[in-house]
Image 1 (cartoon, rainbow, N blue to C red):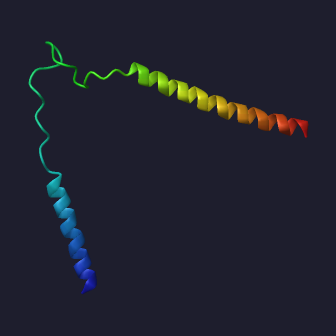
Image 2: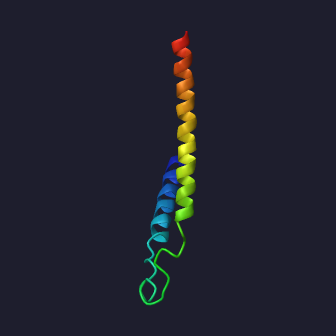
Image 3: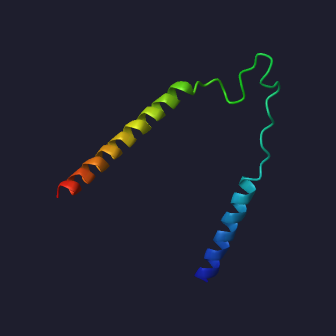
Length: 78
């Protein structure tokens, strides 16, 4: 009895999730990206964030390279 109840609940939850995600997507806004409207992705600048990510990547690579260099230097001295 417990097993059939568990299977029934699983099937009910699966049906509910399928029904919940079956909505149509919202319609696109009127007016395209031309004509004074903001661009589709918004007007967020990506330049400063890109430089921050590049700087952090360079710092991380530099630290990893320095640690690798120190490890090789110690193994050569031994």
